[in-house]
Length: 489
Length: 103
Image 1: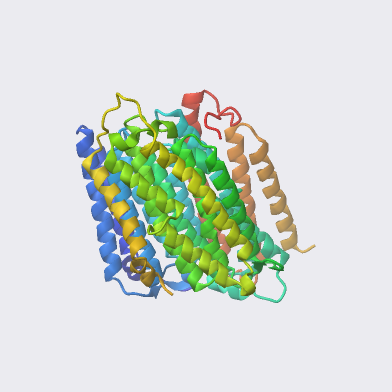
Image 2: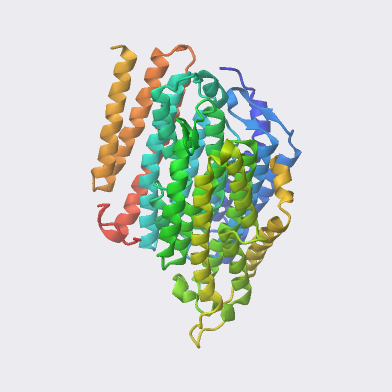
């Protein structure tokens, strides 16, 4: 245990404090001064405060020293963490802007404040290498997300989604905490690098294997990987659209980053191998099984869906499978490929959900309702084309390069193409995913809609956010170096 | 049997009971109780590892437990609120009847 000076703590966590203060301010103002104002004004003020808070935090991050840390791995800042934090803040700004045009939400201050609190939790989550802080931040994030999921009080589906999300989440928190307690017991430390140093040895402790499985269950739930994915379709379908987009984008980026930190730093001495005819126990083979299951379950279940949101949810499970390949590669290239993939995926997913939110006001939820959308909303249809084709992995959009880098990193990871079986499966499943994405696009562009359907009006802010997201997907696809060069090798 | 092994056995048993309860109970509140048991089993682990570990003078395990108890309390609060929210709509807290969304 070492002494931490409070002034250092305050200085290092200034970005988090800025977002937290913005959240509390938005909440207070909405509940006091603006209580009787029109919804539009309340949303405008809350969103403005939220955006300013995030921008201040971003500015603080760019001004801070490139590398610093607090004792016991409580707070570790590297250029990579800073990049992820800035990305998370950018996602929060876009989410807050998207939320301004939703109609179903009555408690505006609370909604924006919860999004900002979840962001604070994610900022801490990515910047710590300490088990205690990881657990507390993860639970803080989860609790905020449960409430955001159940925010639509008038909808039974929203409440049901939140309850299912909560019950599965609570159970996975139990597994995670139990796994962390075993790690602490085996190593006597709660700092990730020290755990790895303490548990190293030629033969793995059976208790360590139990810990690996339990920690994987805990994080597997957070990233919605099969077989811990059961909450995802219901949560994505029932939650208010913006909440679903937030869960699919930001929380996925943060969860994958911290999952990567825990396995690569904390379990560095129990890696193992998942190669064909080259099996060794460790966390890699466990992740191989989960990745393969997620890709198969997610992509095949998505084919059968009639609701667009459920389709996106199952495809998210499939994408979690591809992303796990980046962790399985267990190399710097794998990590940078994973980060590129998850950030570009989050752009497209947030865009797709934002789009569904805009279409919701026109009563569109099922794939069949999308018929003739091209005539009713050409701009939105183009955005949808970009998002879905990027998710499917069509060049020159960002999703293609994400898949390319992550598959290449996985192939390089083992000598003699040991992971070829997994990469082949991933490529085959990408082909399956193209089918159901194209099925949606066929409804939008080819099928004839009802003759009396008029054009769909979308608020300006929503349109702007969607165009920014679509533009970023195209830009990062045409010039992947913009992001990749900052991430690493 | 050393005291540590005894504690770990008890906590493993507690965890299994909690998991079995969470998986088999139909009332959402009892599922929540099962989850709390799982968390408390992990807490017991932390205390045992701290007390019988190499460095009981560092209070790491103890502090971890204090934090996790607070987190569990917050989780119970949110969980009960969500159970209330679904009860308003469905007039039941039976998880086997809360199945409007499927597929």
